Image (tube, rainbow, N blue to C red; front, side, top):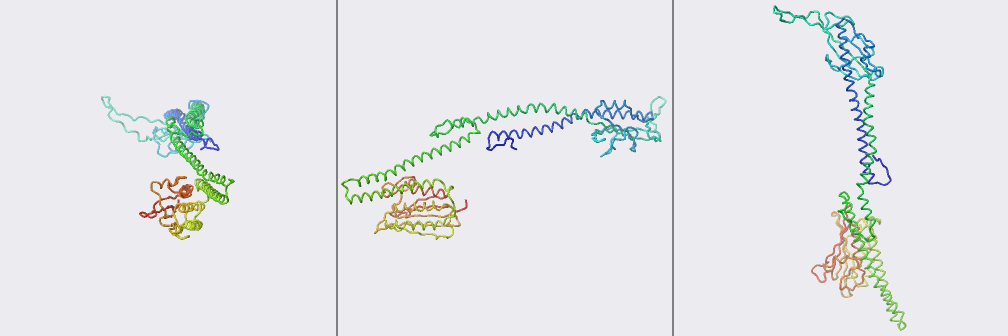
Amino acid sequence: MKLFQRAQNSLFGEILDSLLAPALLVVLMSIGVTWLVARGIANAPYDRILTHNVRALAEDAMRAHDRGTTLHVTPTLLAALRGDESDHIWLQVLDDDGRRLAGDTQMPAPQWSDTPMPGVVYLSDAQINGMAVRIAQLRVRVDAKAPAAPGELRSEEAPPLRFGPDGLALQEAAPPAAATERTLLVQLAETRIKQASHASEIITGVLLPQFALLPLAVMLLWIALARGIKPLSVVEERLRERRPDDLSPIDESTVPLEVAPLVSALNVLLGKLSDSMATQKRFLADAAHQLKTPLAGLRMQADLALREAADAQALKQSLKQIGRSSVRATHTVNQLLALARAEGGIGTLARHPCDLAKLTMEVVREMLPRAMDKSLDLGYDGAEPGSAGVVVEGNAALLRELIHNLLDNAINYTPSSATQPGVITARVLADPFGHVLLLQVEDSGAGIPESERELVFEPFYRVLGNEADGSGLGLPIVREIAHQHRAQVLLEDAHPGQTPPGTRFTVRFDTAPP
């Protein structure tokens, strides 16, 4: 149950709802219990008075029986039984046969679940003339020497005793043969106006102070709750007062235990943000450095071309260098854009089933002219497009970028000549039962030392002693795209034990449903 509805969830409101809703339920239960207890308290003394009155009425009926007369219901008797004018009473005396000997005819007939015991008062609720009444019923024994006429009551006489010469009783004389035991049922009913009034007074006296204290309790609860969540406001103030570049962790010892996990998670987030910002700063610095070299070459070659003494051959050479520098700069910018797109996450791009074998063969065809220019033997070996297990869920554009960068890296760093051509092989292997799909690109180059195999995946890292053109961004892009596709990138020697050992990059895709 929401006592305080709001457009945005509030921790203060949620806790207040959690506390006030049970409190309201307890108040309602308290009202019900108080009503039941008040009725019991109010009924108990009036039941005792009603029991006393029915016994007194039974004694009057027995005395009338002893005199051989019937009980006369007089205003004095009714006034004595009623006590005040707020309630109505009814009385009745019945014999064994259920005949009315005295009293009102409006009394309901007695309903017994068991045989009533003489001398025991039975209390029950009933209706008389549409009014709720409380009825007390008492059955008493009386004796008569002869059958009594209707309306005639006689008291029980003690049996005669037999005495000896010394005046001591010898034995009881047998009761007269004509003696007959009879019972009378005396009923007394009274309305419950006084009980209801008394119960209302008790309830009013108990509940009114509670209702008066309820707003005070809610106010105290509000104040206590506001003080309880104040540490959250303190943490908020500390964060607002920080400088934009201050990503240091928050001191967890100054916050309550319940808030410590939140602060700890926030510190982890601040640490990740600090690392991300440091990586971005390093990336921007490296990017600026990488772009500075081709741009400086462009400017130098342009200055050489503008010299007055430059001949046609020198001018042609300068233009050639300008074209090469511009291509290198364009390639670096494209790689930077590709890395940014890969780091943006595949979740923001369209995902659909991609045939990895088909994509690999298409990229190999695109790279053939460049490989042939360097006298490289570039080919494809592996599963055919459309075969089982070659489909991976992902983004086709990023997967093409991954394959392109692996092949471009192999072309750049694989030595080749017309007499000794280098060999580059792209391969797709599928295991549909194990839900594994492998993309491999291996070359016949000099290989990568184990000490540098992890470093080559860092942006702008270049293997020392290698003069090949490159931006140092291809392999970081490969790893990032593989990560976005739940894949792993492995690096090993293509031909262990041989010289040169070559290099094999393996991208392992998990094709099982996520």
